[in-house]
Amino acid sequence: MCIRGFKISFFIPFICSFAITEDLVEIRAGSFWMGQEGIQDDEEPIHQVLLDAFEIDRFETSIGDWKEVQDWALDNGYDFSESSFSPWGKPYWYFESQNDDFPVNRINWYDAVKWCNAKSEYLGRSVVYYTNSAKTNVYRTGEIDLSNSMVDWQGVGYRLPTEEEWEKAARGGIYNQNYPWGNFIDGSFSNYKLSGDPLDDGTTPRGYFNGGQKIYEAELSLDGESNLPVDRSNNFGLYDLIGNVSEWCWDWYDPQWYSRKNKSQSSYGPSYHHDNASGQSRLHRGGGYKDGPGMDEGKPLRTAFRGIEFPGVSRRSIGFRCVRSMLKEELWVSKQDLSPVAKNWFFMPWFGYFYQSSVEWVFHPDLGWVFPSGSGSYDNWLFFPKCGWMWTSRLAYPHFYNVENEIWYILDKSLIEKGWFKSVDDDQYIRWGRDFPQ
View (cartoon, rainbow, N blue to C red):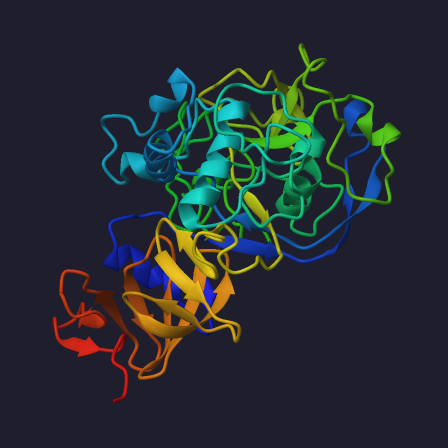
């Protein structure tokens, strides 16, 4: 998260008790050519698709990120399938990475969607998925076959990519080719079946093919062990789009969809009402570590290949990555209005009570009068009359980043006198809040 020139995501994990960070790549608005001719009927015809800008995770969702959000979600009304509690990670003999660095797997489609909602709430964003078309009931529990109308497509929360978004991001501007880099593949490009990486028949740590990958001679390494290792991210800087784990997308599968849809506009795929979705499959894209590079066996590794699976099935070879829309959210969109009990007073569980004046300044019992700016509960700037701008968020609070001296402070709520901040560097105290001139 880059805020006014400061890489906030760099500082937060060091200061606070959580580890999850946001590392997304912007995919600019524009059109691209989707599909591939002459291989599989459901990939035809090639057609041009126009998409709005969006952001997509640079890496596949990791086991570490999954567990952190899952732990929070279970305490806040979510449930997940039994398999999601035991993803497969590194083998016992591999010591170069931690288990948390590997892509999460054994996650069914319903788990992935609920986790996207949980991550949105955890980071202070509004959710995207609901259990009704009125979008009043947040999807947190059960296995519900959501329809397109149950998604807030204009929301800024996390969600699964549509297959159009996934393919545009994966291609990186290279169209009608088998892979993001062209038509050639060997073991130095990605983790596939018997590719020669040290973890054959298992996943590699996400981002493994970054120039430091080790490839050994193997049945299908295809001389990749002889190549000088180079960074194999695609032209957009994304990793593991081919192989490692295949990635869940939003869309239902229809083998004739490319012929049916309006090819000049973006699409969320076919929509089934939850009452008649039984027996339908969802899409996953990119192939996995069980897929090989041959023209028959290797079809799932191609960028255009449309993998299908029932949404309730979880596999070691399927994970996901998230996207979000490039839209600005109203500041503190989830605040609770306390009127008429207390006119102009509001409450947020993480921020507490505050009074909203008619001139946009707010009064907070611990902070005094501050001028707020930003988005949602994830990008919050507060102007203090004595020190200027301070940054915080739902996850960072009560930590604040002071722009003037580039130091993190923590609001000390243990003191009787309000408004004192303590530097995390040297434990020095300074009073920036509730210090009013006489």
